[in-house]
Length: 404
Image 1 (cartoon, rainbow, N blue to C red):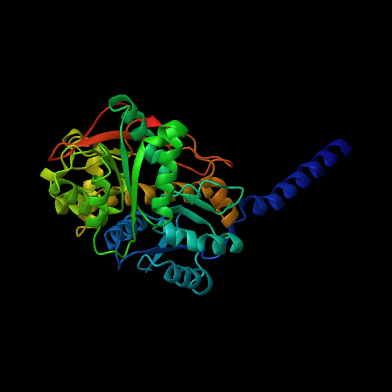
Image 2: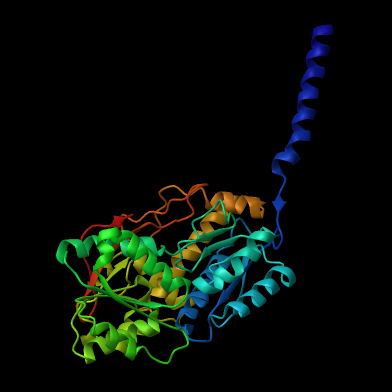
């Protein structure tokens, strides 16, 4: 009888202990901007100003989250994206970012656009411990978790963006005379730095001329004439879309015929190559990491069909030929993946932990072979591109996916 009583008491004690532990195990942890029903994200975008073409990214991301919300959200929580216009002006970016963090109480900043704007906001957000996550900017400074543990980019850095170009140039034109056009801010200067790093000390001597421009300049015609006069046979046109289009057109019009590389962010047929002139764009070389939905190769691809359905249903005003809309779709998809990984621990600390814990992640609209990898010491998610050449109608990819 004593044994039975002791056993019974022991069982009851264990049961009570288990019941007491259950709430702790199921406890939800929330940061600012998160509740049982909502996750509030902030963002700045150039809906106005010289780089307004990129504003489509914010609209496409909002559309993607709308689709996710209609399907039940992320673990039952709807995503609210507060996307404000900063006109690609760093002072305005700071103003809007402060509003989103201090007045709107957002959980994190997601996919804000531009290297100078994000640079302006970076110290503030890191001092506040607010994630500056998956930003739409190409800068080499973002992948520095020791100095800026709350900042991570989405777009491949300039180091990734120029690696394949230099590898190809060494094969086809080892004695090239190089001219470089770049934007006179962190975006353009990082491209020039990365190019020089890949060329090496000896290869850097091949750069015979450089010319910069301001994002507020009306044109870059004079810079192209100056670069042509250097005798260069290779042009790295490392400009933003508007100025890349101007450069392509001017290079053709002055009769200059260099081997021309352009930044992967300036490959849109609709917003860059058509304004420049499709016939004037023949032979351009760039890189890609996402599928181009206008490429006949992906006509029967399930992921591309799904993307086209998304655009038709949730962003009908968006241009399906605009590659920025694909960037936005993939980035929003990645954000949802990270939030899902967080489970019910939606704190700012955990979202950064999960963002830095991505292993060989393959998202449907990434090119085959391009995988997302991050770690606590690696905040550079995409480190692979495939080269492509424009044939007058479409981009044609060639070679293998290359990384750095």
